[in-house]
Image 1: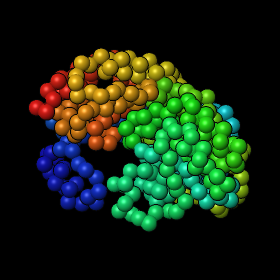
Image 2: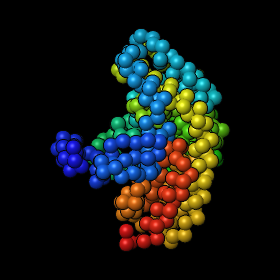
Image 3: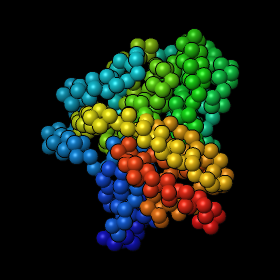
Image 4: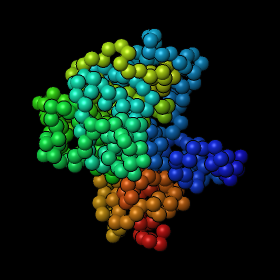
Amino acid sequence: MTQLAIQELEQQFTSGVYPKRDLVILRGRDAVLWDDRGFAYVDCVGGQGVSTLGHANEAVARAIAEQALTLVSCPEIFYNDRRAEFEALLVSLLPAGLRRVYLCNSGAEAVEAAIKFARLSTGRPNIVAAVRGFHGRTMGALSATYEPKYRDPFKPLVPGFVHVPFNNAAALEAAIDDQTAAVLVEPVQGEGGVHPATPEFLHAARALTAQRGALLIADEVQTGFARTGRWFAVQHFDVSPDLMAMGKAIAGGVPMGAVGISDAVKNLAPGVHGSTFGGNPLACAAGIASIREMQRLDLPRLAAEKGKYFKERLMAIDAPVIREVRGLGLLLGIELRTKVAPYLRALQAEGVLALPAGLNVLRLLPPAVITYEQIDFVVEKIAAVLAKGTDV
């Protein structure tokens, strides 16, 4: 099919809820994507954080193919070998104290489950989240999300959610009371502008929830699985949450989510929650292969080293339009003094795919298998389009 035919066909039948770029992507390998014309792009979208391991990893692809010929679906009312192996492997990576996992199909589902588990465990209704936080688009996750453009069309939302300024420990302390079930926080706000948490804020969240009988939920959907240079971003801060939502890179691109659960979480009896597809053998086989590949490649170390190099190169760009470069590992943001959309279009024309994070932040989420030569290419293209200013 031609590019025009593909676009017209998809436009005819798609829901209409996604903003479409004028680009047809057909295949990928490692940190490169190719369009229908054969033009190559260095991928700094990374499936919006999914493709930390890169595209078309052979070990993951083989695991998916073999499992598809063995058993795809097996609900959790039965035991399964792939699920048991995956759960044990996943728990071995989690921060101290997270001893069990609930498996689902996406990061938003993981956040929903964590909210439900916190309310069920504590018997309390309220959740404290952060200004600029993004936790998903299902109704509970959306209620925790801050940005009005996502929330307002769907009001009334789930009651009991309040938002405090991110990295403001005093405001957090004032918000937690005897009706607070949990504090829900991203260690690095991705969609909200690539803002890392301060150690003081996360330590306060951990101490205050423990003191006041609430739970701490870490949203590691985007930051998990080597993205920030550790397996999970909370490990940079030496903080162990009571519940941890995961997704995106967990299974090498196969849809999957999970919640890590500590012994502080009570009342998880059979029937209180569930998922038809959660923990299916196909996703678990992909998850096992993905994590083992991450271990084999030492992906946390690669993300830390390449992220440091990438950030230093970006900070060296001499462009008045740049206000700040920030981030952790290979979750990087360039805050601009103007809107980012024209620069994203200009970068695409130059062979670099990137994301926004709000109106004026250019977000980079490349696979950790990106090469240093590809990083240099991306930096050179960013410097070139930023130098053009309003002429892009």
